[in-house]
Length: 46
Image 1: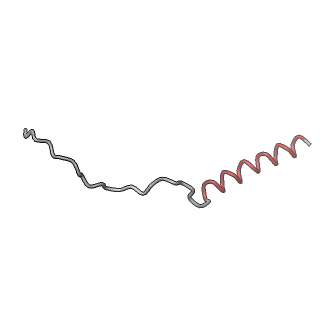
Image 2: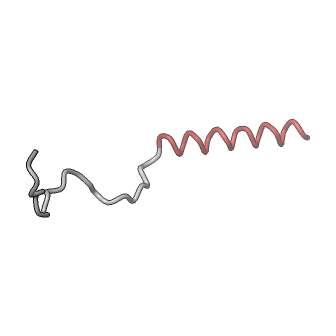
Image 3: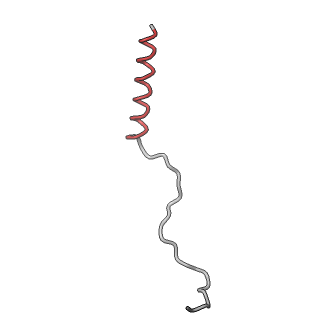
């Protein structure tokens, strides 16, 4: 009985990891990229 429960738990752990790795991307980060500079350039020249 205990071995059966342990095997079921291990199987669930592995299948959830597999689904997480190979499943669709669920990240909801905003699209980012190169942003144009809209500020004032530094007045000091070296």
